[in-house]
Length: 322
Image (cartoon, rainbow, N blue to C red; front, side, top):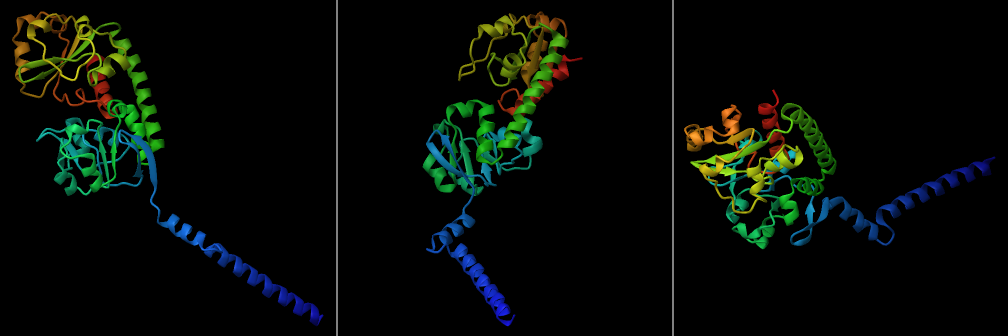
């Protein structure tokens, strides 16, 4: 009995020693390799590698101080607020001001000293690097910099997908895109019920000049291509939108046989009064039937993005669905 007890005690001691050695081996990895690997894993930041105009680039997914001039729409759609907002002097993207109003401005051409001032940990730029004051290398020295390809710059859906990947918000990106598609489906049905095959046009009045939206100009793409609203012949004749957007004469506008016209103009623009006082304009179908709708914040119409598109849909529903 005494011998058996000693054996049990000895076995217990040996088992404890084995556990202790195994634990030490697990921490030290025997050769020391796992120790350095474990430490690196603990300190390693979350990163993602994505394609960009500059080739593959590795970026942090935990960035908190982000600058993405003119593309704040896509950030906000993902629930991310940048540290500065795009501006040309005092002009900003008005339709985003309810979310960005308290942020400092950063000039559209991204002066390097202004970028430094905001201490970003991620910079997102358009593919047209020549429009910026600094070079890619200048911005890279400040923070990891992602330059969108031309496709991502021009396609806000792709933009949300890529931003979602970069910011570790892929599920959020999928969610907001699905919600938007449902909004389009619902709005399309409501508009079809309300106006049927009637035509709609959008004109931007700046000072005393008038810009008629082509079918793919800014948020008019939502109107014609997504919602399927009928296009007036004059708009069709303009063809595809070009980089340079030229004003249209009042005489040419008299040819606009649209059933409904959205007149986009800030309060006090001379163009509103010019059209009111023009007998030629007042003889057009939309004017004669009282179907001119003045929208005093044109900024969502003159942009592309998820929020801009949703706001444009809301404008259409407000005025066209009675």
